[in-house]
Length: 425
Image (cartoon, rainbow, N blue to C red; front, side):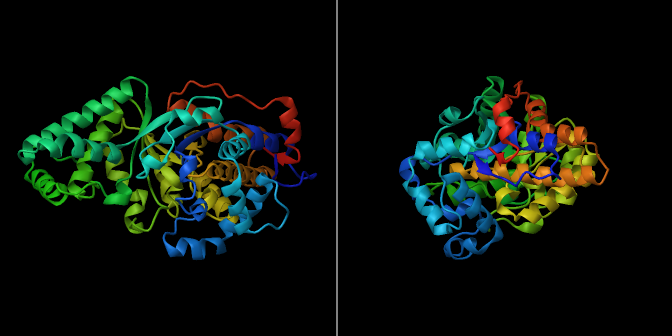
């Protein structure tokens, strides 16, 4: 158990208890490292998207890192005032299974929806491995671009004759793969990272297989990648074509498609990461349920607007925890609540690589939800009962409904609820 905030007379007890004990569905996360690979990825990636030398040099000087240092010191049982280097050292020397158990046991996460398409897959645990730390089975989110690259390398480029036949083969293979893994229940959502590759300005009308623009793009892509050991789909015409295929199949099989929006690594073009670019596509596929990931930060108000006016748009508020400062997280939650319907917002940790990312993503989101909603209740704009309902929906029920998980929340027992007066998990 780790301290959240002192229990004082101005704490809204019922709201506080629910915020810090209600089970959560993590609607977007990634796999954890294998124990033998724990030293292969910089620990600072836990709190920053910086890369290379800047990650090691600058990330420890962010407010996000200072806050994480305190919270992880509590999680590990380190002395008050422990440094980031001491936190890192403890992580590296603690038994890995114990570290995972402690992080998840302190997070309140009941179920994970896991995107298994990160580019370091050989270093990561498989999906079922994560089930030992949660009360409900982990479900898969299919990263479209990772599947596409695998199909191109193994089934299309190996038998390439001409762009048209190759494109037909590719389209059939992709449709078959997505259909099979959707119908058998293995996957509950698709996800696209087109934001990273060529941006979110996907035209609303798809190109057909006879399009010379599409055929030329495919031929060019083949020529540039046929001799490379690894394929990266970063050819705008092809990326857009793939998004349209996924959008169409998402509607056919009635499963959501997640879009990375906003906050990301340095290969992302920020101007093309705004969800405003998706509006024509949203209108073109009214039956496709779209989840805007990461609160679209720093474009949160635009995301809230789209969520409010389009019935098929939902808004996730992951990754801002723990990458954004505490006051920043509160401001983002406030911006989401300005306009977005509360039955269409969902939490995620964007947990990845390190088990502590799940812990920090959960505890900080719970703190932000409580702080924002308690202030709104005290201002007389909401009753405490309505605020409690908002928390429960954001943490669990909205995702449970959207992804058709059919789960029942496994609420903490009375003993744990009593402890929430002074602690959060």
